[in-house]
Length: 184
Image (tube, rainbow, N blue to C red):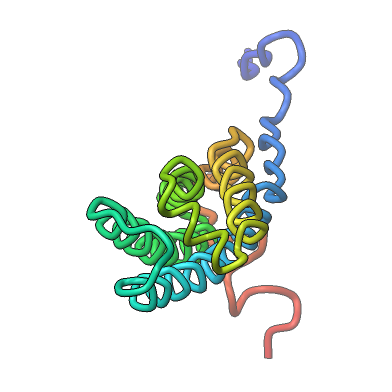
């Protein structure tokens, strides 16, 4: 008697594993674009603040020994923030998670600086004297918007997503170069 191979196990084969949907990069790319805009605004704010400090050293309306160090700290904070925002935006475009963290930190600094501009009376006098109140408010609101965008879960989901290809498929669903019906 001839022996037949055993029957396959009953039932249907397991369904193929479908890849998870790719998260949308809308919040990440918006955070990168807003980071670049905020970096330019922070660099401009640092320049104006340093200029105001150098102009007001001898002839401002009110003088206080504590206002100059705070003003210098705000200008340095804006400069560091501009650098962090530019590096963070570049890292977001390179799909690195550190980019979202850097833009979040870089946007937090001008938000604090905008608050300091209004809490410290002598700095408030400088801002009013230079007629920059609207610009400080705009930078502060943009900074808060950037902090929220950078730290949203969809931003991190997009930056952490790595496409999964089956083992042995380094080129994804496409055949490796040199193979296919059109070989010469």
